Length: 125
Image (cartoon, rainbow, N blue to C red):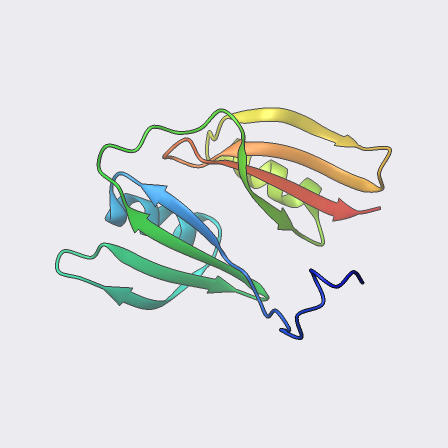
């Protein structure tokens, strides 16, 4: 490691922060459709929320005027990309990139959540 990067600090987990226009709608999607559990919320009305499922963690922040980016904002590793892809299709989510095996060793696809946030999904092949 070079001298600039070798500062002695060890990094822990890092969680994606997703902007949402409607916290209740986002909470319903991530808990009822994807199976996350709310572990923290802050504000009245709620302006920030932490959701967890297995090793995954998402932070939602209320941004009423949010306009989605046209690039992926989070990467989600799963153990069954086919099952998650089918779930996304059943719930009418927009699939941005179709499910396929990539030359870099992942079975992957990209979908949009109800706020237009693009989530890149990957499963090691």
